[in-house]
Image (cartoon, rainbow, N blue to C red; front, side, top):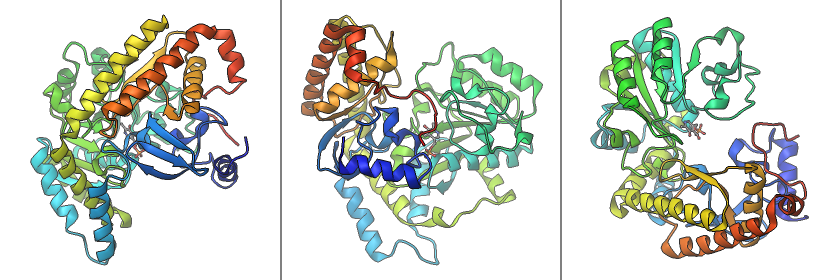
Length: 432
Ligand SMILES: Cc1ncc(COP(=O)(O)O)c(C=O)c1O
């Protein structure tokens, strides 16, 4: 189909390897040829593409960045007014000091922080500090922690990351000498973790608090104790989970405190800022090594984060987001069961995730295609936000219910022919 948006994607693939710098924004991951690639404006949960077509975003919400909705006025105003005063200068901006103090007030684990602009680099910093603090090399991971050499080296010998992020991530370009420096363990597998700790001198355990699986049998507490007993640094990577359904880390729901914590995505509601925080004695090791970057000191990031935190408190966004997520999970369960289609619903409440028991990619593609035609950016993952009001949700559930009814009526073969080969990709693959 010829459109300005489609043309832009064709142009993008010619000049940007993979078409975009963020894997999750590849249209092929959602619905090849139909999922819009580029936007002209975004407000609340409404996005317009380059052709002026309007969509209600009930899925990615900036890939998890905008819990307060797109272009939230008080945040934009704070940023714009500081831009007018000057975004960059030869001197430091005071906003980062005020933000560091605020984070230390909010978060039990934080006494000192460093700032970055992306989650991958924040985790790389956290690890460097942990290695400097312990003078050890090996790192144990559980979850997704970015694109850097240290993380991707997990895949040098085997596709270990398929259990944590995506299948098929090649470690091409990562020095083979890194093999064995980052090892992975499975969520809830405490014996596996113990084994790795016994057979290596481990600097840090870095993990997501939880993503799709709930901790069983005091897993997080046991990890905490093992980290303490083995003298290694426990880092919770809360790039995705933090400041979403809790005002601070999701870890507070589990009464387990890490030594370091990493926040990103939500903390500046779509502006670029990530935080590496932790106890003073650990964070101070940042002074034994060199960690420094020009644009970690620009002003929009901390300005937006300060405005975001105060808006989150003013609006109790975390309660609202939790409530939205619970409603989504409840309605997905009902809609699927009414249509007699078997699904599994997982994920923390703020990020519900739905998996079709049979032919997941096929059904997911059909859902997306049908909902796109109704004006929704819908998928099987829903990053909840305060822009998802009662009205938005009610109308979404109605359209989704019609979509499931259609799936039931059509069955697998007709769904296949309706999709005409346009099925979403499931793993990492070349686009050009
Ligand atoms: C838990 C977690 N860690 C790290 C990252 C990487 O963050 P970024 O994409 O900002 O580099 C992500 C991104 O999805 C994430 O979910």
